[in-house]
Each structure stands twice: as C-alpha cells, then as structure tokens.
Image: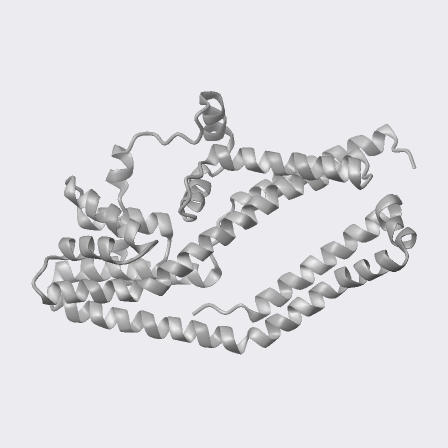
Amino acid sequence: MALTPELTVLGLGAAALLSVLLLGFALSDDTPGGARAVKRRLRRVAPGAVRSEPVAVNRLRRSRQDSSNPLLDRLIKSLLPAPDKLRARLQRTGLDLTVGRYLLISLAVALAFGLTGHFLLGLPPVGAVAQGISSGAILPHLAVGYLAQRRLNKFLALFPDAIDLIVRGLRSGLPVSESIATVGHEVGEPIGIEFRRVSDAVRVGADLEEAMWEVARRIDLPEFKYLIITLSIQRETGGNLAETLSNLSDLLRKRRQMKLKVKAMSSEAKVSAYIIGSLPFIMFGILFVLNPGYVMQLLTDPRGQILLGAGLAVIVLGAGVMYKMVKFEI
C-alpha cells in the first residue's frame, strides 16, 4: 500500500515527536526513587554538609570540552537541555567517553538500525526512521546505564573494606588524608582510582571535603556521601573518628546483606517475569521456522506492523510493571 503525502508528513512528524521524547528519556535523571529519598534524608540530617559540594572547585575548573570538534562542542553546549547530567552519567562508567563520542555512537546506531529496517526488513521510510531514532536513543542509553551500574556495584562491594583500611590507618596514628592515600594504592579498582583522585587533589591544595564531594558528584552513591558527612560532622564536633567509621563500615555491610537477601527472595518472581516476557518472541521464532510466509505478513503488511508495534508496546509496559513489582530499595 503506497503512502500518500499526507501520511508521509504525519509519519515524519510522529517520528520527530518520538525523537524528542526519547532524547528527553535518554537525558533524564535515572536515579531510583529510593536513592532520591536517601538524598532528601541526607539533606535533612546534614544540610550544611550537603550544601558544601565543591562549587568553588567547579568554578576554578576550565570549561570542559565535550568534543574535539569546536562546532560540535558548541552545538552540544547550546542545544542539549541537560549536558551536565549526561556528562556525569558517562563519567560513572569509568570510560573515557565524552558527550560528543556518545552522540556520534548514538547516531551510528540510529543509521545502522534505520538502514537495516528499510533495506533488509522492507520497512517503509517512516517506519525505518522511527526504528532508527528509537534504537539510537535507547540502546546507547541502556548500555551506558549497564556499564555505570556494574562499576558502582564493584565500588559498593569494596567500599566497606576501604573504610576498614582507613580505620586501621587512623588507629595506627596516620592522619585522614594519608589513610585515604593508602586506600588509593592498596584497594583495587574502581575504589583505588577515586581515592587517588582525592589524594592528588589534597596534595595540590584542595580541601579534603571538597575533593571528596567532587568524587561523590561523579559516582553519585549515598554510601560514599555517608562517609563524607561522617568526616564533616566529626571535624565540627570531635570524637573518636576511627570508632565512628568502624560503625559506618558495619552498617554498610549489613545494608548490603539486606540487599542481597531481598535479591534472593525476589529472584523467583524475576525468573517468572523473564520467562513470561520471552514467550512471545519464542513463539514468533517457532512460527517463523514452521511457516515463514504466515509470520512475515506482520512485517510486510502495514496492518501487521501496527499490530506488531502495539504488541511490543504492551509487552514493554507489562515488563515495566513487573520490574517495579520486584524492585525494592533499601
């Protein structure tokens, strides 16, 4: 069925609207609701410490280049609605990935999927454009989120050991800065590189809390902010810092144990969700092997494409509901 000019214009407008919505999704803050609640509690417990994030350090730093191409760098800074959020999200991966490279990768993914849909799957131009835009916005976003979460999980697994090492350094008579430098050299990645950055910043004259808040802004973990607030409160009120940090380490270990317990208890529901969500795709593959002509009507006929899109949307909606049902924040 040939597309009329009105339908073509309507489809291109819908694709443009979809691209704007997906761009907003890609640049949105992916902080879980539980983490946002923890941030609010941190502000109530120590508002002065939370406000002491390194504003001065950010002012003294040179303007960050998001691309080696000056024109692309200016476009990123002028057109992207929230480049700082995207930049911080890319930094959490631990990779040397700038905003310019991320956008180029997204563009390459969009072109690859759009051309594949048009020339290999026989999609109309409007469908190919929509597929390319959605793939270029969602797939790199999910990949960055996976890499960042994997690095943060490694950080959390080693963080109590790093605090214990600081405690042993304090009990042996070392100052806090030297204990942090010891953590940077003795503990593996990604703990080591972050604490080395703190130690290097202190050596060139930065305040310890400002340097640690700079790391906290980059990794965005409530557990690390607990450490900074503990150091800030101890400096203002005094007390046994080694004992306080030892209690914090024990608290973080118990918190991690509770998370693992919740994960184990919800694993059965997650496996059930995976099985239910994969059944439509398994049945599609079986029918494609048994009767390819019957299944290909979903891809070649416009009515089949509409039904296929509606089915995928319902599957994604159901998967999201099941994900929320088994997702718990500690």
